[in-house]
Amino acid sequence: MKKPPQHAYEVTVQIGGNDWEYVLRTMDELTDYLREHGPNCSVISGSWGGCHSVHIQHRDVSPDQYRSELDQYCLSEEKQDV
Image 1 (cartoon, rainbow, N blue to C red):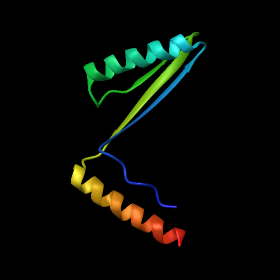
Image 2: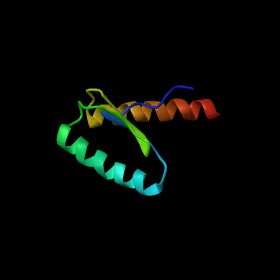
Image 3: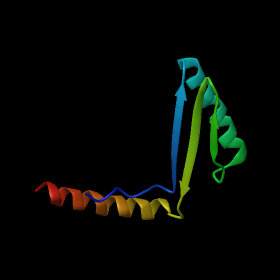
């Protein structure tokens, strides 16, 4: 099966915590960090309370190009379902 096309930015966030409050607090802190440092940053951190990482992929694609790739992908998936 072919993978769907990627958007211009794909962000993978992984958070592991010993309690739910850690997870929520980390999400807030990561949002602020990403806003401040921009899309070329990466984050890996850990402690006894939990750990987290952020991986950002960027490709130079316009919205129109993405939509075209997505249309082609959907058509190819429909043909496989037949």
